[in-house]
Amino acid sequence: MKFLSSFSFVVSIAVIAGFIVGEIPYGNEIATIALIIAMTLSISNIPFKLSDFDRKKVAFAVIINYVFLSSIILIFSMLFYRSEFFNGMIVMAAAPPAVAVLPLTKIAGGNERLSLFALILSYILAIFIMPALIYIFLAKFVSIFDLLKSVALLILLPMILSRFIKVKSSNEIINAFFFFVIFPIIGANRRLFFVDAKLLIFLSMLMAIRTIGSGSMIKYITKKKFGAKNAISYSMFAAFKNEGLVMILASSLFTPSAAIPAIIATIFELVWVAMVEANLI
Image (tube, rainbow, N blue to C red; front, side, top):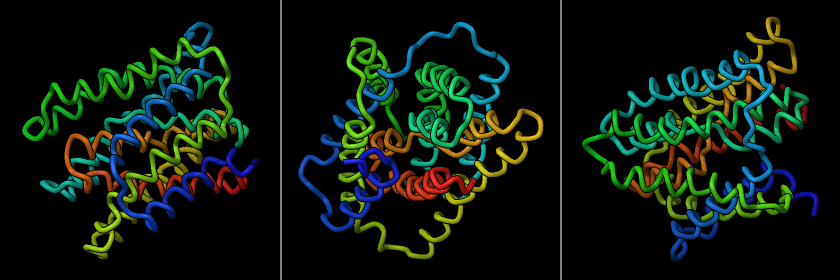
């Protein structure tokens, strides 16, 4: 079933299914378990060895994601201050890049080694950055204990479990679990998409700039200085956050509506994936 190997196709079906079916029992629990399994399987294919790598290039990729992209998200979040969208966008800014940047780098012909090391470093840093950044901005709204518990469950646990997985997992299996991450979250938030059309259109414009705009700009800027292969890798770190993680964390720490920015960002990340897979970018 080759169509299951396409991350963009599987997530697109999950979005559509969520809108059609709506909320399901124990949806958040199903999504949480699916995310832990999906991240464990995804990371299990990545060797955590930080030897023999270009420190400057790897650091630059991490800076692009955690400084450049996160700063854009933080600036946009101020437009929704004191709302659930603000809470969700702070979680998004604190999140590491999506694990999907590695296979997408390969598909687009980028520097796989650069993306690999930058991804490893990003997830190690995320253990400390996520709780710190979220608590700095949302200390009045979130329990530090609940925050640390969620980060340990959704990032640290998959990283530990992945070291014990010896069988290489296929993209089809990993994508199938990502389906059960996205589908329940979309269903739980379906009614919220019909509340304020103008607000959602405005949020969609911002997420399009945050994803397609930032990714395209970084690729254009870095291509001349670092070469085409490295520019592709850098563009991935400028376009992607781990939206599945953001959805679960935002909805569990706050309310389901806090996950909406991540849901909309996912849609535009799918557009970016389709453009990359079609070699349009």
